[in-house]
Length: 140
Image (cartoon, rainbow, N blue to C red):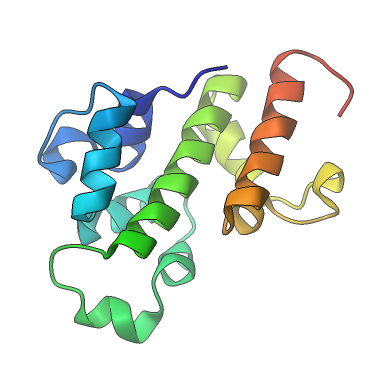
């Protein structure tokens, strides 16, 4: 299942929050490299109903100092979480069910929550692999 950069952008608040329309992975890469808006982090946390998610992307004290843009590392973390969220929404075809999956411990991930696994790139890949297995009805 290919990544839909427009869906990832919607998870981050869309054109209104990002200030640009995202049509390709290249558009998303440029936004991440320039720094995603702090508001996109709030949008993401609200979307998955996980307020503490903000502090997993940016430490609380640092977040309070950020005015407009996240740095590259923080933007990459946020994009990774948004990507996993977009894929889950596509697989489940039901946002509340997808968000519940992301917030719940998954036995196939060693009892870890997908949102926690996605803190690292390798963890996000494990979540994506599980979602692909669910999508194509493969043994998980």
